[in-house]
Image 1 (cartoon, rainbow, N blue to C red):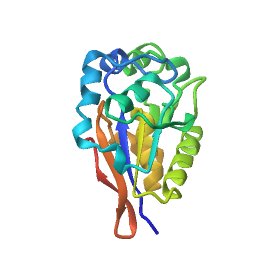
Image 2: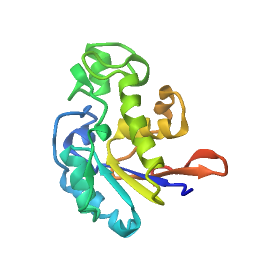
Image 3: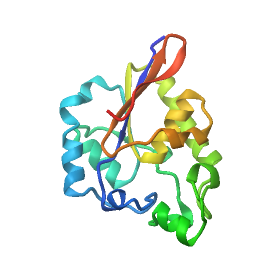
Length: 189
């Protein structure tokens, strides 16, 4: 049985990732720096090595995939960013100052957005799909919080651990196995 390695790529910089604004369903493009970040992934990733290539439907993820050299990918809604509901477009500092003192996504969730259980459910579907694919390498182009949740689903960890796994723009992380355990092989490289 093939043990698939799962590569996670967060999209390159956008104006909102630069400012710290929560971005889920707002479909904004990469900045010029974000485009350069995505292009810098090319020498590190050979599209021919990946038997399964998935992307979030959001423009920032699809553009990152394309600029990294992946033109043949499947779009899946399961890789969308956590739906921030009423906190869409707002920074954590503004949320704490004007809406909910002490707010943290991992503990408090979002009003009129997705629950942690809903996010876990759809990203667990991605984990099952990758593990059952039979390919040696799979890659997912996605988002910051959703990539953290995907990794936690891979490891079967509680979602509150997500606070300890920050994901940089245009970073590459690799999940796989270490002997008999699911493992993080590389993070934010």
